[in-house]
Amino acid sequence: MNTVTELTDYMNFQDLLEDEEKLVRETARTFVNEQVLPIIDKHAQEESFPFHLIPQMGELGFFGPTLPEEYGCAGLSNVAYGLLMYELERGDSGLRSMASVQGSLVMYPIFAFGSEEQKKHWLPKMAKGEAIGCFGLTEPDFGSNPSGMRTKAVREPDGKWRLNGAKMWITNGTIADVAVVWAKTEDGIRGFLVEKGTPGFTAPQMKGKWSLRASVTSELIFDNVILDEEKSLLPKVTGIKGPLSCLTQARYGIAWGALGAADNCYQTALEYSLSRIQFDKPIAGFQLQQKKLAEMVTELTKGQLLALQLGRMKDKGKFSPAQVSMAKMNNVKIALDICRTARTMLGANGIMGEYPIMRHANNLESVYTYEGTHDMHTLIIGQEVTGIAAYR
Image 1: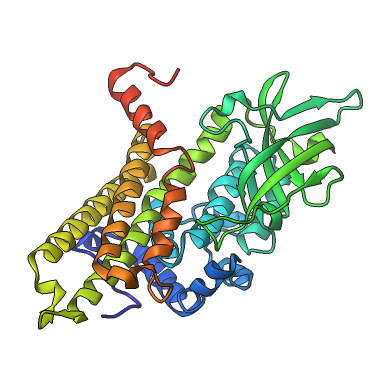
Image 2 (image 1 turned 180 degrees about the vertical axis):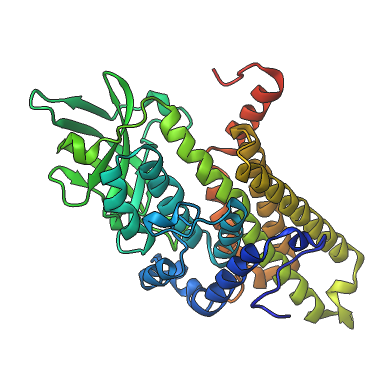
């Protein structure tokens, strides 16, 4: 198998890709094969992120790739971005999460809601990987109900803002140079850029995870943090639509990324089953194992076609957040199912770091509930098709 260019493609969906999109995927696959796969198990075992890869990812244009070239970004299609996420998560969810947060949850809101000065200051540096960002929405007591947030920003008499509160489960938090933080104000929910080192702002890392071990997960704590309005306030959005639009961008990338983890597990199981001999023949020759392989490749193929169609709709600006919810909900579920099935085919070997399966399965347990839980996405689709909101 040509590990540089080949991915599982049972229905030839790559025939529908543009040349640039194919090149992006092949570039990302080469990067993952050469730079990520040889080291990622060690980082997961040690609960550390491979920081040395960040400048390389920036040089390759992996951060904010759909944003305009005038800000140092690549100006790629949404499909190309999805394929990039696919390949990065084939390496590890932590790697895709880092790039997804950087591009979709930090660079995107700065581009969409920031002033021209904020965009010029942050976006080129973030595109190169010279500055890292994080996104502060989820709180210790509020995840699926972000409108219940307790973090508050109050305007002071001198025109500055005083920020108090806490955020939880924040990817990149401890290593971030800037945090996009959403807080309640007297005018509604507003977004703020909080720089590392600002007095009163701390970002302790959360340790002891059994999932996303090669990812930096943090708390964000704001204790009377004073912010300059011109420098910190995102001026072009007020209300919950701001953070939710960012989440839509990130969920789209996850819908592709989860398939990369699934593909890695499917191919591992397929190759293993062809070489593992039991009862004098490869286990791939037994009916039950072929059933598992057939179901895995079928679900993976359906997920690819769903993600591709969503990407084309997104590039045309003709998609709904509920359609993104469907792709995220479906593709993460089938990816997790594929990982679990692949583990059964490898038996005891499936739990070893020599193979990627248990690492991917553990990671996807988190992906299943972050950026909107599986259950909440189910209800979002339910509201779309019935017109009735069942979660209020």
